[in-house]
Image: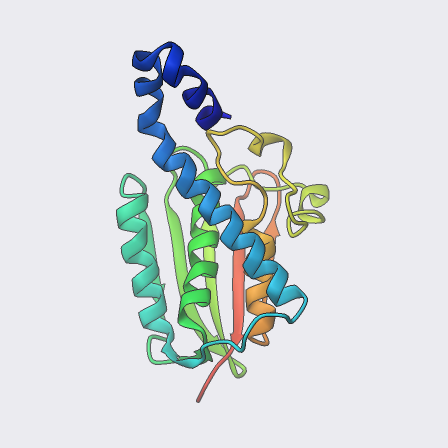
Length: 205
C-alpha cells in the first residue's frame, strides 16, 4: 500500500513521494522474503522441492552463525548462548536450518517482552541434536499454542506492523524441520515465557 501511495504521489507531490521512498526498499525486502517463504513452505509441504542440499553441519557452527546474525539484526537485545554439544553434527541443508533458527530467534524478540534477554541452548541426547530458544515474554495460552503452527495465523497481540511477521515463520520452521526428519515444538504458558525446541537427528550422538 505504501509503494502504491508513493507512485500516486510521484507526479502530484514529488516531495511527499520522496519522503516515502526511504521505506520502500524495506517494503520490497519484506515482500521478497514473504514470497520466498511461501514458495519454500509449499514446495516442502507438497514434496515438490528439489532434494535438500545436504551436508555435514556442526551444531555449534549453526548456533554461532545464528548468534552473529542476531548481533547484526537485534544488537540492542541480549542473547545468551549455552552450547553443550558444539561437536554434535547434523546432516542437513545449512541454509534452511539457519532459517529455522533465525525464525525462532526473531519470534523470541517480537514476543519476548521489551528488552528481555533471550537464551539459545544446544544439547545432544538420544541420537538427536536439540536447539532451544527461550524467551521471558508474556507466554501463550493453550488456545494460542493450538494455532501457532497454522500458516498466516497470528495472536491478537501480534497483529500490528510493530510486532512484524505475517504468521508464516513457525509454519515454515516446522516444515523445514520435518523435511530433515525432525520437528519444532513450543512449550509456553501465560506469565512464564516461551521455549521453542528444534529437534533434529544427530550424527554420532
